[in-house]
Image 1 (tube, rainbow, N blue to C red):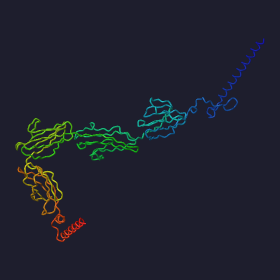
Image 2 (cartoon, rainbow, N blue to C red):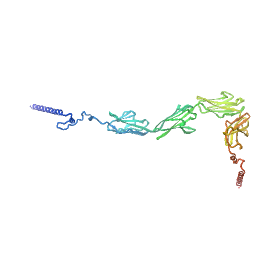
Image 3 (cartoon, rainbow, N blue to C red):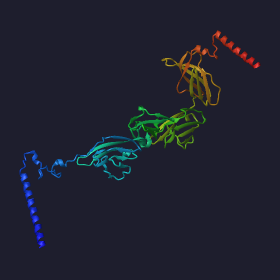
Image 4 (cartoon, one colour):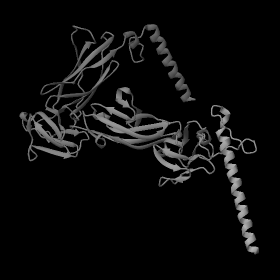
Amino acid sequence: MEVRRLAMFIMFLELAAMSQCSAHAMHRRQAEDEVNFEDPQADEGFDEFGGEETQNDTGDSPAAQRVEPASISTLPTTYKIEAGKSARLECNVQPDSAVVQWWRNDELYFMGNAKLKYGLTKISIVPNSKDLLIKDVSATDAGVYRCEIVQDTPVSINHTLEVLQAPVIENLTATNGGYVVEGSNLLLTCNVHATPAPQIMWSREVANVNERLRENDGEFTGNSLYIKNVKREESGKYYCYVLNALGHTQAEIDVHVVGKPRVHVHKTRVNSAINIEAVLQCTAHEEPDLHMRWYKDGKLIEDISTQYTISTNGHHSNLTATPLTSVDFGTFTCEAENLHGKHNRSIELVQSPVVEDVLADGPKVSWTVQSHQPLEELELQLKPLNAAGSSWIRYNVPLPKPNGHRYEIVHRIENDVKAGKYEVMVKARNTHSWGSAPEPVTVDVEESSIRSASVFGGNLSNGNSNRFTSSILSSFVMYLLVRMF
């Protein structure tokens, strides 16, 4: 009985609840039907108690869904950092919760704190920031770094990292390793790493002195030196000197300009006589892999010749000849040849006197004569310098005493020659023929009044001569008195 009563009570409560819900739904529909859609306020809802209805944030309004994009407040910057130091590239964003990614030269390095490139041992994100930290920077770290916010519309800035370093020369190169043929072109290149850009200077060692090269020595372009039609004398050690505000350094390289040999003979004329041995000397200057040979009047002298002896040692070659008849005198030619060509010089083997080593000192002339035959005459020929149409004036010079086959002569021009400058040609004659110096020398003859003032002259005026003689006598008497007491 009690159970039946309880069931009926529950059913009654359910019916009451359903009735209440239906009435409430009807009331809401009536309220919606009364809304004026032309009234801007019609969109505002009211609850059943007449108050303003709370707005639903999950509605379909676009204004309710729009979020302001993140931004970067840091400006693009060029960082100039010395090599070996650390660089911190800033990237301040708002809001702080935004996620950024770092790129270098269009290669992604980081997204947030996640490292996306393998091997970045010295690059990291600074804790509690978006900044990029590069430790122990080197030249390879230089470039453009981009900080970019990850969002629908990306925002980014570019930083440039310049690594400042003192000059470092990677290498100094030369055409063909520094071995070039004479007449070809030579290119020297000094490969340098340095920031800021360095100044490059070139120099060459000349006679153990380092001389800076100028514009007329070659073409200077960037880090290169270009020399056209290089010459033999441009061989040597070249220096590349590099400097900037952080330091300096240098490098060197040897340049060898090779070409056909250059032959030098010690004397162009050598005196000899029948059955008198003569040695002709020849040198080829510093050329590798050369061959030397001798000719007599254009005909090759064979190494097996019994009349001549050839002795060659490296770049030096001597020919020993002993004339047996007059036909054995003549022109001997020394020739040197290598892969680049040949060169020669000739020596005259003669019986006439060989005049050499002619020197002029004021009015004094000195010279030597080589002659195995006895000398018979010495002669000076004078002509005023730069006097067109003037003729030679001849003067005989006393013969010196015999001293083997070499004579040394010193002669002073006579006083009766007018003052001025003269060309002087020295000649000598032996029992065979005349010989002369290769070229004249210039002699300067002073005024007679100047020469007469010499203590060795005899043309002093009477008054001056008497005073000069008295002075000498007085000095001599004083000297004797001092010695006596």
